[in-house]
Length: 598
Ligand SMILES: Cc1cc2nc3c(=O)[nH]c(=O)nc-3n(C[C@H](O)[C@H](O)[C@H](O)COP(=O)(O)OP(=O)(O)OC[C@H]3O[C@@H](n4cnc5c(N)ncnc54)[C@H](O)[C@@H]3O)c2cc1C
Image (cartoon, rainbow, N blue to C red; front, side, top):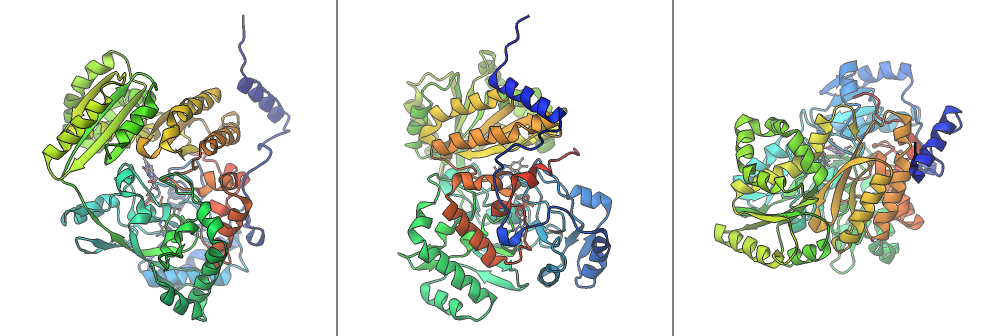
């Protein structure tokens, strides 16, 4: 019998042996670091403090407080691979309640360092951002009102689901197009806090481009309006002798003193959700100072968002998709460059693993589409079945165009098709109308949910789930990425936003088993190195949380890490907001909270 052992197998055997001797548990050279001056204890509240917490909070607020086992278990998970069980889940009724909770935590933090607040909206965060071990504040119950909507802007509370918000804006023929693939599940508050993006971000940008104004409860327990201001207004804020004035003064000093260094640190990709976007705060040329830009994407680590004013843009009424089936990656770089000359509204892709999965679990789509929708999807996919019979393509590209008339869309699609004709594609299909275009789009949007829900013996392990590289590097990058994924024997789908070079690689694993878990750190290190070698970013949309927070120092210089940490300290001197996430995350803490219950 011949046994072929690869490097990875040998490494696994070494680890298995070491573990059996209890010599090793966690990989060496751990990434991340807890703030020196703000070290968070890695264990939950003491029992006596837990039993006191509910009545103490209830005396302060009007909203509901739930410390039942069922609720705590439910809120101990988001869509990440971690679990942190809260002591209580609070649904504040109004801003007064939120202020009271923040003041309570701020006042008691010194005596009880385990106390902190984790904000949560729909809980679909994939990085572990929406879970915590102390007080979880749920925004979906009472912060669910849509305010005034005009043809240019909308006011909305953070707990409003995007699926309920969009129909309201569409009545004015406008929308907020930075919605994620989880658009049917998530809220606008989560989108702001994660700086979410999605298929339309290629054309319109991410959520950071749409936030005009925020109301935020900060660490002193007061609510503040945060919006772009000019230098005169900034000077007036700095002159204030209070907590808000101190924040403006210290953040201005930080971004002004290190202006060039901070601007140069901006990731050189079209999408990024890592760290705090300090480079967007202060613009010497325009004289605009905008703190919304660090609160967006902060994952609730700087304060609690209580109200949002979004900029809205007109939605083009017609749309269609050119679908390209690729046998292999040959010519991908030139194809991307050619497509981008046509300025598509979105440019998405998914791989053969995703397609196989969609075919295997086809009836699943009934959940999102209903029986009629499922039937319609089956009928519409029939012509594609003939293409698939010739072999499952390695990559499916969805190139979407929108316009003011149907003719405009048809013309753009045909022009792109003509340009792509000389590439060796397996097939092309023109779905000129919205009605035809949705079928592949739904597969792309639902691919992660399909994995989460349908594969029984393994679980989605989002740890290399949101990488970004400049699109022109994709032809070299993608095969090397696949090599790493295969070398760790990971079964993973690859789907993403081709036009932005943003890919979601979602392995299926038994992460509750040690032998699987020990793959995480080395695989992540290798993938991160590859991403950074190609000039990319570790996260385009999903943010840092517990999974990528520890690796930020791989992406940014030690000086930049100091600046990010200083920002966190300025806003949150006692670390009462969502610890163990972003710059305050530590690999050892994250790994000791891997999800065990599914
Ligand atoms: C199937 C699936 C597909 C996904 N696809 C995408 C995608 O395409 N693009 C993308 O960007 N993301 C995607 N995600 C991740 C996630 O759905 C989005 O980031 C979403 O915007 C999070 O919204 P939420 O309401 O679920 O927020 P939550 O998960 O509740 O919270 C997200 C973060 O925001 C913080 N937060 C929540 N509310 C507040 C508040 N009021 N104040 C301050 N902080 C707050 C939380 O602490 C947490 O750190 C996907 C997730 C799933 C499950």
